Image 1 (cartoon, chains in turn orange, yellow):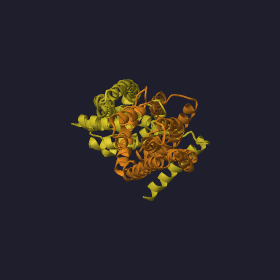
Image 2: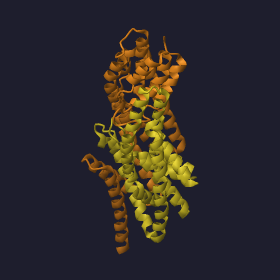
Image 3: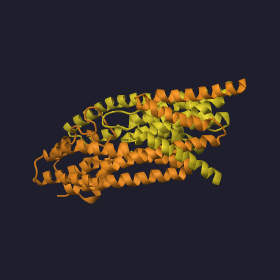
Image 4: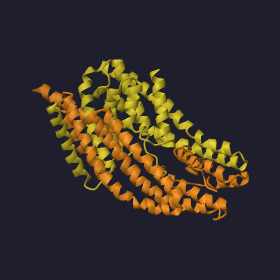
Length: 253
Length: 231
């Protein structure tokens, strides 16, 4: 007994709701069971066996929402074997427990600390340079990439089971994350320069210098562990104070 | 009507941010223009989106740690600034943006607390789902997952328009009362933009980050200047 393709697509769609009821006890457990349900319905005609399978997937689970697709796919791979009697009922659980930590780490470092902020900075710089078409293009490219990767992970997990680890490792995501972090720093700096140029276009002679000073001082205080929001208020206050001081100096001459 | 639209945009963004999809639509760079568009001022949203994105670029949900609710903050700041700009008849200017941000940005921190409470509440949802599975009501148990989307939607649906209303009332009143504050506030916005660029660059934690920031900042400013002269 295997899960039909249409059902696999339904499971993948439900993977997008993995964190809908994220909770502090089971974390993504409800989302995982919700995603698995269409496949379990195909595999277990007996309601008691289906309930047992669903209970298995209500155990604590937490992973990155993108890379978790590989674990959902792999869990179906193992459930098919459980339904055929080829594996014990503990196999899908062991698979989840072994993979959730490493795939969470890969997902956090590549997607959350690399790809998404890179596209965030790129969208910001693009908006400043070219307006909304650049913003729309950045969002579209990001989503094409992330959805393709999520689907690839899901399919690889389903087809390869435990071997999905090698498939993910072959993508060298940590190395790409490193490059994205370097590239993202550059793009954020470019966006800062564009903000400075744009502020000059507003006619305020002091504004570009204030943007540059804000960036310099910001880097300095943040690298010393200062908190973001109080520093943002400080930047606004100091910028305003600088403008007042300068206007008084000019008025005094 | 404006407030209802803002509430809907903020509520949907809160759902997209964590519960469904995570397609960057709730990131400030996309959400601010979407909010501006919904309220009839796309340009205002485009002015706010890039600095807010850079400011909150490091707001990432790693493991069980909760970041500030950048989507709620961005929706409220943009909503407040656009509505204040409409009331003044100027649109979103740097001074309006600065004052709106100063009034409303702390909502992102309140949003993090709300997220924490929602996660606690969801423990009950999960426990109820487990009980339903034991009782054999499998479909009802699984519906609980989708019910988890209701509270994040509701929290932002309520909080974003409330905070925006505060900015929409206070910002025009303050700027009419103190018209001399316009240049200092615009200067405050410029300094904030620079700070946001540094915060964005810091979020990547790259090696030689400061050198990269300084070099690319200069390049960006010069390139924009040259492009402006060429036009």
